Length: 296
Image 1 (cartoon, rainbow, N blue to C red):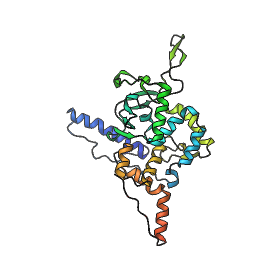
Image 2 (tube, one colour):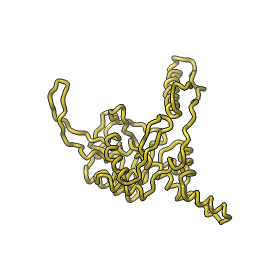
Image 3 (cartoon, rainbow, N blue to C red):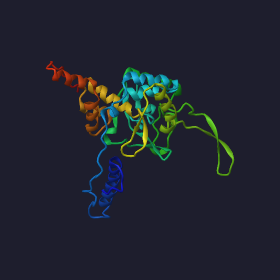
Image 4 (cartoon, rainbow, N blue to C red):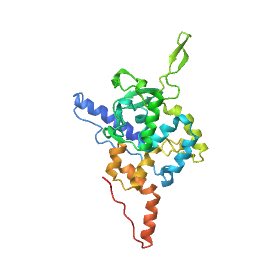
């Protein structure tokens, strides 16, 4: 792959898309073989200091939550307790929640296509289709939103549209009306669907992390852009690190988080755990090391 496609992550995405198209072409017998089969990513993966990968602590997240508008507290708790991706949490429907068994089923996602929110069946990977256990805190967060919105327990077909009346987590303006201008210049009232938008959520997230005193700007090594830390996505990394510290096996962590491979998670564990540093220090000093047992 040439240097015209900048960045390791961008090259990976471009190559994945290219191979998908070429495999379909082979399957449809439009071409005899996949000419991109042996194309490799040439850009080096960015290397970052462990401090830039270490997720916030429980105490830091508590400060962030305190500085979020109260309406968003259940969402913040749910993300912290489940490690679900933003698009998975915002796509969660009442029919996929079982409070008797304390589980939620990840069956679909909401994706942002250039500002247009789309309901989609397939999560990021096949492993994304999964069952996630609810802690008492996560269960309480879901119950609070059910009490707030009384979402419909129906299971509408994905191709039938968003159906926000089924969603657990919504914008506080969901169901309200607003006036919009038509192409003809007239103003008409429309009902706000209230599907949560990541960019809109940043309007409350950024002030919250700044007021909590934990925000810092980090330069993205691939894009060159300056980004704010922590991201909402770091809730996933925090849960992964926490589970590892409790001795949960990597396989089980992958299962809960909906990940195909554990390499990225393992890297975070190895470099992000204060207990790991303590363990190594004890070993260096000749002290007996307490080993964590894996929980299946």
